Structures are given as C-alpha cells and as structure tokens.
Image (cartoon, helix red, strand yellow):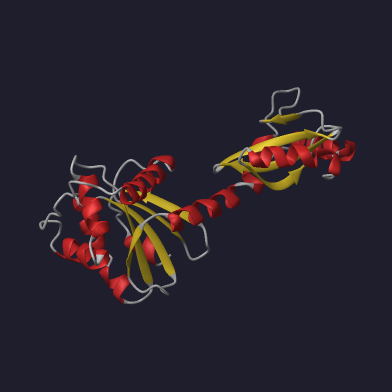
Length: 249
C-alpha cells in the first residue's frame, strides 16, 4: 500500500470510525441474515463503521451509518479514485475465505484414500472417465501407502454423458472405496455400469460436488486442492508435473 493511501486510512480512523454500538447492530444483524459474514472492523468515513467480510466466499466491505439510517455495501474510493477496500480485503478476508473454502470441501461427498490420520490432506475432483485421474491415483501410491498423505476424491461427472450415472453407481455401491480402488488399479479399463435411476439423495450429492468445482473455477480433472507445510492454501488443475510440490512441500 502506498504512503498516500496509508495516510488517508489513518486520517479516516482518527476522524472517528466508531466501534460497533447498539445503534448499528440491528443493520449488522440484517446484513448477516442476508449472508454476509463479518470478519474485521476497518477504518471508515466519519459517522460510519466499516467492516471487511464475505458473502458466500466473495470478499467485500460494508459501511454502516452510526445513526442506523443507512449502509453501503461495496468498495470505498477516495477522491483520487483509489480503491481503499482492496488492500483491506486482502489483509483481513483472504485467509478467512480460504478457511471457509476448506470447510466447504470437507462437506462435499468424497472417497477416502489413505489413512484418516495422515497429516497431509489433499482434495481431488475426479471423473470416472478421466485417464489423468487414474494416473494421478497410481503415482500417488508411495505417499499414500507411507501414511503421510490422504486423498479425498470428490467425484464429479463432467467428461462423458454417462459420467454422472457412473458416479452414482460408485457412491451407491456397498464399498465405494473398494470399487474406486479397483477402478484405478485397472486404469479405468473396467468401466462402471451407469445407474439408470439415480436417487434424489445421491443426485444432490453429485450436484453439490459439481457446483463446488464450478464455483472455484475448476474446469478440468483432476483438480487438486491442498495446504502446504506452512498451511498455505494451494490448488492445481490437470496432471501435476511435480507431485512432491503437493505431497511434501
């Protein structure tokens, strides 16, 4: 952040950005009910209280009038046209949003691959008809078998017309993990029989998985999400060239 913007933010803060009081708590609750999650209070124009947060994992800023008569949902600019919200969102909302993304991935329907107590957790969006998914599964075996890595395969049906019905067959099987392993051992040559009538409960799970894939901007399989040794959120699309980047670093 350049010096001029820093000076502006400091002057705004000193000008009287009030702490949250009962005067604007009613509006704050209303905004929360609309889906906005408040994260951090920030400097705001005189007579207002500013917040950084996110709505459905989309970062944003909110400025609430201390007299509770109005609020502004959106970015704040100064007279020079500088966006004062961007740096504040990056500082306060980025990690909170990524943490929320990670929790959302946990809620997806996935197939456990590896020991449940393995320290490195890797989420993989995969399709039964994806040859690169099978290749990734095979090349990951040394790390999975070592007990250091667990893969959580989020099944989607995006490659072929029958993919969705095959995912349903997999999820409806008595032992999805065993069926999934057999499929990958055979490099996908033993194709799953498509389920003709997909139960609503299974359909919802598949839809949720695919909605997540689309929401996070993934358009190919495998799409991979993990946290590195420092806890930094990472992602990749397609067959990775360096598996150590995902499993060790």
